[in-house]
Length: 165
Image 1: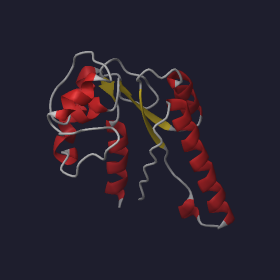
Image 2: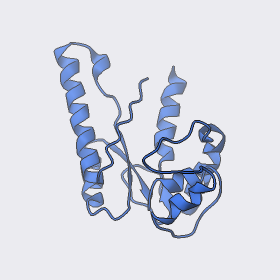
Image 3: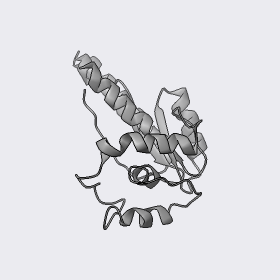
Image 4: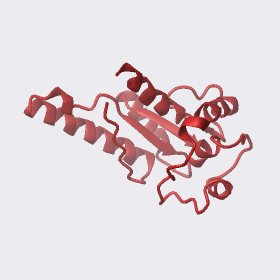
């Protein structure tokens, strides 16, 4: 299994459109080179609610095109914070990075998540905390309440594919 992350830092609709282009290009390459391994099998997009006006259009486009869109409300940092602690209060995209700074000094969206981040050890607690805040946020292509994230769905998909090997 190959996982490729393509960060474009754009609005949700641009993110889904980019993912669709990448999938289409992979299908063309697979056909032209007669190599089915070049075809992208699963497409996942991870977006924030933030103040984006294109989220509803992105959700609709993703549903119609078999793109698994995971949404963090208000932003992805809630998913990261849940690896360390419970946090169930409504919040905004400006306060969450500040809360992470005590756990990840100097945290910024522009910097890579450090190698000692507790992805493995904190995952199960983060998933439980996510579901505790919004039990219905358990499918892709859905906007959850504030705070919420179904980023764990992408992790589950990767873990599931890895177990098949």
